[in-house]
Image (tube, rainbow, N blue to C red; front, top):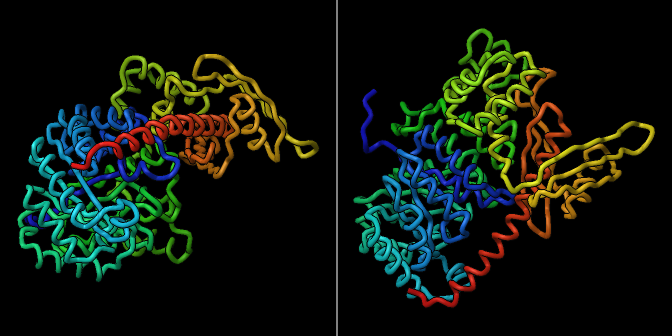
Length: 526
């Protein structure tokens, strides 16, 4: 089938920006780089790498992605203040294809209550921001935030201003997930009528899932003429999240003959990307999640099983292999050497050398002693697990948990602190895991509260690696963490300590962000 360029939909991935704003997620530079490299292998068109003004760590991560990730456009988000735009440019300028994405609200509820300004001032800020960004790069995207709750005529005015100043992509977001598909399509049809210049630039959709309509609204925008979709892996993002990249990509791939649209996504990389994002963010994928949930290609009903065994297409509209699910048969064992491991990791998309390879090899040998066969999923899990261990994080030195049904469980733990010292603690609890986490609190001196705890198997069998994800709260901040081990308690301890490290880092970053906000309020509005 011949594909027309006018029917190609660009995929704008915001996993590292909007996705990371999910409560409890805090990715470090190395983790963001790994995800960005995988997004490049997935062949997304644009990576929104972060919000550079938000913190020094975010700036450094965006800068590293711009320098090291090749293929996609690398985009930095900025408010309309010149400090924001300067920071975004300085972070992305080393990319082969840099973009600045600037935004300001156009809804009266935001203008009055959040910005505390006027419609005229918003128009002035939009004009100045796009003009300032154009001094740095030709690729400038503009978004009127909360557009679906804005007066349409006013939104059209602001969009026209952005076009007059040279914006090359116009994104009209459903910021709070309020719209319905027919409303969103009608909005776009009216905007095309009121702003004829929209037909000359790329138009983009960015829909949130508060009413469960993010993908449906995004698709209605495509049908109305938009050719860029802003989305995130596993649908992560603010509140209920964003449109799921994998759902958009597979909708257009599976129904291409009917809808006539296509993307450049390498669909066989979808499952691997989903697993990586889930492990590094600590956000588990719900079992019945479309495309990437573990039940997406599973069949429980006898009637369904019978049909699938006779002919897969009786109950499956997609082949599991089309999203990369049939790559779990890597044969490595305890006699495999470094070279074989490195080749296997390269096949999985991991470039591991030097000390990192030595550490991965050590973990691999430990696992191979416990399992007869190490699979691709096992390797992904242990390499991702090593990536999450920051040099300055807490580490378990030793632990001991006593549990029985005749007396309460008791946990003793020794934890190496970020400064190199070792803290010890012991505690009883309602169960072995509760006692273990309470002992960690005693050892570290931080009274974190567990909010969520999940255990899953990376692969099947009694010798499977266990993956634990936790969400905890410390001084009002949520933080997630994940750990992998054949020992569930060890995996639990790793996950808890990583979440604790993230919460403490967020505390520092939050204070830095508050300082920046205070400074920004003092600065004159451009």
